[in-house]
Amino acid sequence: MVKTQILAAAGEHNPIIPEISEVIVGGIAFLLLLFVLWKFAVPQFEKTYAERSERIEGGIARAEAAQAEAQRTLEQYKAQLAEARAEAARIRDDARAEGQQILEEMRAQAQAESERIVSQGQAQLTHQKAQIVAELRSDLGRHAVELAGRVVGESLEDEARRRGTVDRFLDELEAASAPAESSKA
Image (cartoon, rainbow, N blue to C red; front, top):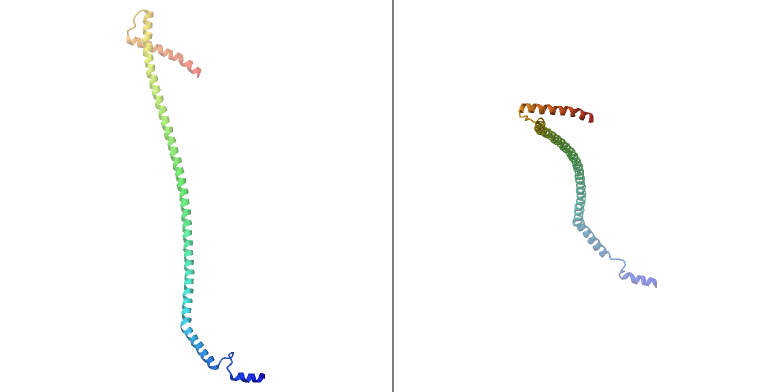
């Protein structure tokens, strides 16, 4: 019975095994599809792949060039910064030296001005002392002549004689007071 079923089945079409004509048509369609893909799609894929590779490699090269440029710029910046720091230090040192020089000049000017004022004051004191001494001599001489005139009872009107007497009296006073002052010092 199994045999009869197999024979009966041999006359009918088996759905698992394709027919030869279908295999041939399917093979031709596959080869045609493969030819179209190989002729049109594969070159487009190759072109797109080459463009992407080129863009990526170009991007990498540009990135490396940009990185090298950034490194050069950084080195220039560092060099300029170091130069600016050195310049600032030099300017600071120059300013300190100039300030010190100005300070010394001002001290010297102040010292010179102080010495000028002191010498001017001493000269003025010397002049005033001489003027006061002259006035005192004149007043003292006049008073001494008046007193001597009162004591003696006569007028000492002769100017030359009166001056000689007063000058001699004052010189004697100065001579007597000079040893006393030197012994105090």
